[in-house]
Every structure is written in C-alpha cells, then in structure tokens.
Length: 298
Image 1 (cartoon, helix red, strand yellow):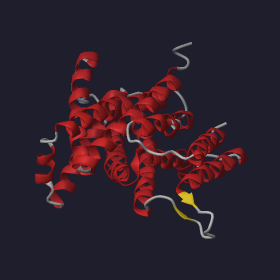
Image 2 (cartoon, one colour):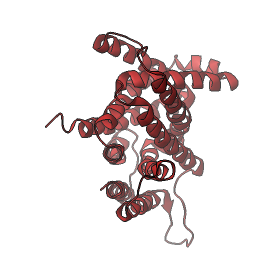
Image 3 (cartoon, rainbow, N blue to C red):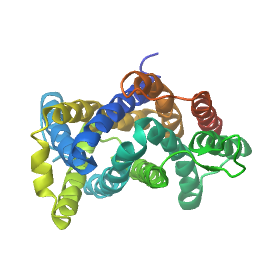
C-alpha cells in the first residue's frame, strides 16, 4: 500500500514542507532581503544534500548523471530557482507568504496549459472548469470592494501580486523541465544539479547588481540565518527532493493538486506567527482554489 501510494505521500510531505519553508523565508526576508535569503539557503541546502547523498548513494556529487539529466535539470534550476524564486521570495516580503502561496495555486493550470501548447496534452471540459474555479478563488482573495465603492480594486500590492505570479510561472516551467530531465535518476542528486545552476545564476545576479556586501552583512543577523537554515532544510533539501520523488511515482497533475493545499495549511501559521487578520472570504478563496485544482486533474 505504501509503495503504491509513494508518489501521493511524497506530494503531501512536499505540501507540508512548502508551508514551513514559506513561513521561515518570509520571516528571514523581512530582515535581510530576499536576495540574501535565496543565495544563503541554496548553499545550506547543497551542503545538506551532499551529506545525505554521500551516505545514501555512496557519492556526494551527481557525477553519475547523464548529459540529458544535466541539460534539462540545469535549465529547470535556472527557471525554477533563479527566476521563479527570485520573484517569489520578494513577493513574500511585499504581500506575505500566505497570499503568495495562494497565487501559486495557479501553477497547476499553467502547467496544464503549457502541456497542451507544447506537448499536445488534452484538457477536458472538467479541467477547464477547474481552471476557472481556481482563478475565481484567487480573485476572491486579491480583489476587494468596500460597501461605499463601486470599483473593484486590488486588496494587496500590485507589485507583490505580479512577482508572485511570475514566481508561479517559474515553478510551473521548472517542474516541466524537471520531469523531462530526471527520468529515473535519483531525486536528491537531481536537486543538487538544479541548485548548482541556481547558485551560479544568483552569483551572476549579485555580481551584476553589486550586492555582495549586503549578502555578507546578512550573516550578522542570527535570527535571519536561523530562519534561512530552517527554510533551507524544509525547502530546497526536503521539499524540492520530495516533489521530484513524487513526480517519479505519480502523475505531475496529482502532485500539483496535493501540493496546492499549502495556502490552506499556512493560514494557522499566518494568524499565530505573523498576527495576520485573515478574512473569511480569504479562507473561502483558498478552499475554492484548491477545489478548482482538484477538478483540473480528475
């Protein structure tokens, strides 16, 4: 039973990891900035993965990967980690992890549409309905209108929402390229390859932006470094690796559906840790979005 549902179990663990890492990275990003969080968490995650793969595979680095593995996983790392997470982590700072994760509910519809356009995958009428419902759920949260106003307006920072959406695009395309490049290769070693690409990418971004002094100064903030370490453990180390394990053993759509419960899981943390006032319509919006994602892959 456990073996037959390994993919689904891995996806559930991934959803829990995404929730924990989002909370940790939001807290760290508000103290030292999203760029520092990105580069430091990659270094920590790579070290953890190297130790883990050394003891579990007998080799600490992905030297046994094929050229095809390297090609697609490097692209996946650049798109998913660099482009996707660069914008997503800034969205954490601007609009918070709870709203950002809700926007990430758009990842499954984006993935489905991309599969239709690039690989000719079919989308059923029920799937189209699911996409629409997901968008309605997201809109319910990000749009607002007071009793004395007729115009509908954004309830959160437009820049933050845009960054979260770009992050969703990065995650969707990163997942597709991971699926293409991994095959039956070890998911933890595959994550190492993605992190190598991302680390090089962020080094270029930081060098061009002349931000190395800012990165160095971040290490003086012990609370931020602690939160980055926690986020790195549950995110790039456990979360990403379990997500790759999940897509090895079950359909990508099922993985996307299960991991999309993060916007609901994070609500209690947002209330208790960040003291956010969560409106009933925001809880309803998160549930509606999840229902839409589930319909997409029935």
